[in-house]
Structure formats: structure tokens, C-alpha cells
Image (cartoon, rainbow, N blue to C red; front, side, top):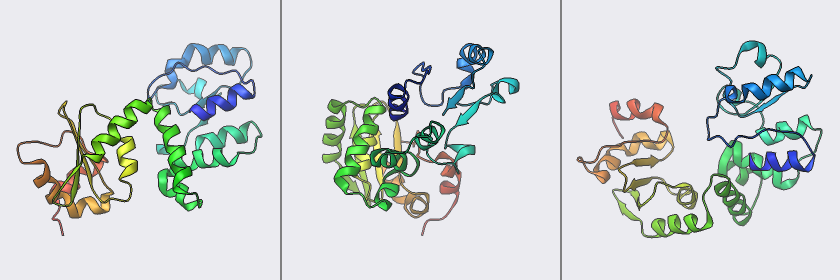
Length: 226
């Protein structure tokens, strides 16, 4: 979103941003949408949940997104550039790859790890992760322990993006936060094979309060591990 706002400013495009958190709903902009439509403008909704938006309003809007129902579309930044009839720069292509396909997509583009780290750091900043916070998370990751083939990172505050990037080529990484949250990052395919090791690592007296890819949780717990 940071790059999209930058493009809009450079091209003097009028936009409204209420700085809502991830999962923001289009209906939060209903007054602005009605005003724009009355003026004869076509509102463009960028990565907003449109479920509760009145159908009559939605049909007059352009929806830009690449998540969930729109997962087969190009990254949102590329859709915005196409709408404005602009060609993406190399950096914007990287940002798009990161946004839609994370590190694997950038590797596929043939980028160096140095350039990939630069794009990821921009992503952290966009998430509100300051350089100071990044340094703290990386220190916590440096102090990690490994038990039962699981990397365990103890955190004071819940923030893991810099560490998961650092551990991208590792198989399992578990975050245990002082506020009680426990999050495990891994691909679903590997998760099924490693769940027993994970449960041993966190201990029977500490339940998993959160898990990455929650839809797989029931499958993990009801399947045998090989």
C-alpha cells in the first residue's frame, strides 16, 4: 500500500486513506464513495473488504485486490499502474512479487538476497516495524534455541516478520511471546510431519494459542505424523 500511495501522489491522483488496519472494510468509506459517485467519478477500492458494501454502490466501483477471491489477479500495485497506464519499474515489479509471492517470487525473478532484503525491509516499515524493533527481533532470533528440530524464538513483544525472513530457509520456527501467544510458522506439507516434535518443544502445559494457517489445525491434530 505504501508504494501505491506513492504512485498516486506522484501522479496527482485524488485518494482517501483512513489508515485503517489490515482487513479494512469498504463500507468505512461509504460517505466518501457516495460523494465521489454523485460527482460522476468512478471510485477505486484498493484491498478493501467489500462484503457489506451496498450492491448499488459496489457496481459503480472498480475493485483492486489480489487476496482471497481475487488471488488469481496480479499484485495490486500492478493493477493500479495498469489503470493509470503506467509501466512498472524494476523495484515496483519486485514489490509486486513480494506482495503476491513473498521471497520465493523474488528469487524466481533472479534477484540477489541483498536486493530481496531491501524490499523486505521496506515491507517491515510499511507494517509499522521500526528499525529499532527490527534490531530487537533479530537479537531475539540470534538467541534462538533448537529443540526436537524446531527453532524456538522467545519474544518480549509479538513481532516476527524480520525473524521469519531470516529463517526462510529453515524448516520450522516457533515464536513464544511473553504475553502468552504461541505461533508456529511452517509450510503445511512439513507441518504434518513435524507436529509431534512441535508439541514436545512447547511442552504439554503450554497450549498453542495461535497457529499459522489455522485452517490446517484440525488436520494436523487428527492425522498421524510420519
